[in-house]
Image 1 (spheres, rainbow, N blue to C red):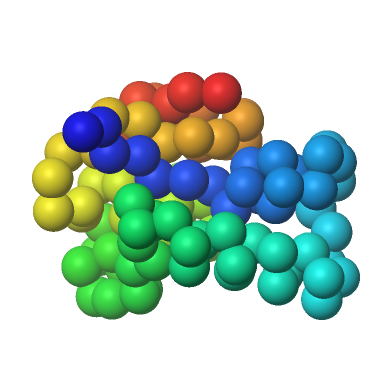
Image 2: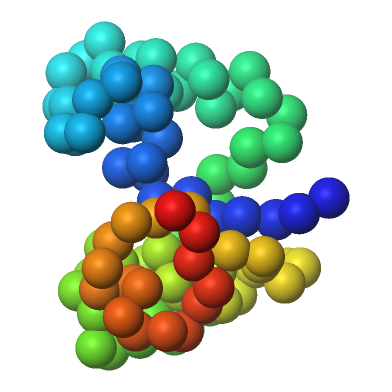
Length: 96
Protein backbone atom coordinates (compact mmCIF):
# COMPACT_ATOMS: atom_id res chain seq x y z
CA UNK A 1 0.00 0.00 0.00
CA UNK A 2 1.28 3.46 -0.85
CA UNK A 3 1.71 6.12 1.81
CA UNK A 4 0.93 9.79 1.28
CA UNK A 5 0.99 12.94 3.35
CA UNK A 6 -1.95 15.14 2.47
CA UNK A 7 -1.88 18.91 2.50
CA UNK A 8 -5.24 19.50 4.20
CA UNK A 9 -6.10 22.26 1.75
CA UNK A 10 -6.36 19.57 -0.91
CA UNK A 11 -8.81 17.53 1.14
CA UNK A 12 -11.03 20.50 1.95
CA UNK A 13 -11.05 21.67 -1.66
CA UNK A 14 -11.96 18.18 -2.84
CA UNK A 15 -14.79 17.77 -0.36
CA UNK A 16 -16.27 21.21 -1.06
CA UNK A 17 -15.65 21.20 -4.83
CA UNK A 18 -14.14 24.61 -4.30
CA UNK A 19 -10.64 25.93 -4.97
CA UNK A 20 -10.80 28.17 -1.93
CA UNK A 21 -10.31 27.03 1.64
CA UNK A 22 -13.62 27.33 3.46
CA UNK A 23 -13.52 28.01 7.17
CA UNK A 24 -17.17 27.19 7.82
CA UNK A 25 -18.19 24.77 10.54
CA UNK A 26 -20.03 22.56 8.02
CA UNK A 27 -16.85 22.21 5.95
CA UNK A 28 -14.77 21.25 8.99
CA UNK A 29 -17.38 18.71 10.11
CA UNK A 30 -17.52 17.12 6.65
CA UNK A 31 -13.73 16.83 6.54
CA UNK A 32 -13.61 15.24 9.98
CA UNK A 33 -16.42 12.83 9.09
CA UNK A 34 -14.57 11.62 5.99
CA UNK A 35 -11.28 11.22 7.87
CA UNK A 36 -12.89 9.33 10.76
CA UNK A 37 -14.80 7.01 8.41
CA UNK A 38 -11.75 6.00 6.37
CA UNK A 39 -9.51 3.55 8.23
CA UNK A 40 -6.63 4.41 5.91
CA UNK A 41 -6.46 7.97 7.27
CA UNK A 42 -4.16 8.66 10.18
CA UNK A 43 -3.83 12.03 11.83
CA UNK A 44 -0.39 12.59 13.30
CA UNK A 45 0.19 14.89 16.18
CA UNK A 46 2.96 17.42 15.92
CA UNK A 47 5.86 16.09 17.97
CA UNK A 48 9.51 16.97 18.44
CA UNK A 49 10.57 14.61 15.66
CA UNK A 50 8.45 16.53 13.13
CA UNK A 51 9.59 19.89 14.51
CA UNK A 52 13.26 18.90 14.26
CA UNK A 53 12.73 17.80 10.64
CA UNK A 54 10.99 21.02 9.59
CA UNK A 55 12.98 22.73 6.83
CA UNK A 56 13.87 26.27 7.86
CA UNK A 57 13.40 27.66 4.34
CA UNK A 58 9.64 27.02 4.36
CA UNK A 59 6.93 28.83 6.30
CA UNK A 60 5.73 27.00 9.38
CA UNK A 61 2.67 25.37 7.79
CA UNK A 62 4.54 24.04 4.77
CA UNK A 63 7.45 23.01 6.97
CA UNK A 64 5.12 20.94 9.18
CA UNK A 65 3.77 19.09 6.13
CA UNK A 66 7.29 18.34 4.88
CA UNK A 67 8.48 17.45 8.39
CA UNK A 68 5.62 14.96 8.72
CA UNK A 69 6.56 13.39 5.39
CA UNK A 70 10.25 13.20 6.27
CA UNK A 71 9.62 11.51 9.62
CA UNK A 72 6.84 9.08 8.73
CA UNK A 73 7.39 5.54 10.02
CA UNK A 74 7.46 4.12 6.50
CA UNK A 75 8.83 6.00 3.50
CA UNK A 76 6.24 8.38 2.05
CA UNK A 77 5.54 7.91 -1.65
CA UNK A 78 4.42 11.51 -2.12
CA UNK A 79 2.97 14.62 -0.56
CA UNK A 80 -0.36 15.49 -2.15
CA UNK A 81 -0.22 19.26 -2.61
CA UNK A 82 -0.12 22.04 -5.15
CA UNK A 83 1.82 24.32 -2.81
CA UNK A 84 4.53 25.86 -4.95
CA UNK A 85 6.89 26.45 -2.03
CA UNK A 86 6.85 22.75 -1.11
CA UNK A 87 7.31 21.76 -4.75
CA UNK A 88 10.20 24.21 -5.28
CA UNK A 89 11.94 23.05 -2.09
CA UNK A 90 12.37 19.60 -3.69
CA UNK A 91 12.69 17.88 -0.32
CA UNK A 92 9.89 15.37 -0.83
CA UNK A 93 8.21 13.87 -3.89
CA UNK A 94 4.98 15.69 -4.76
CA UNK A 95 1.86 14.69 -6.66
CA UNK A 96 -0.86 17.08 -7.70
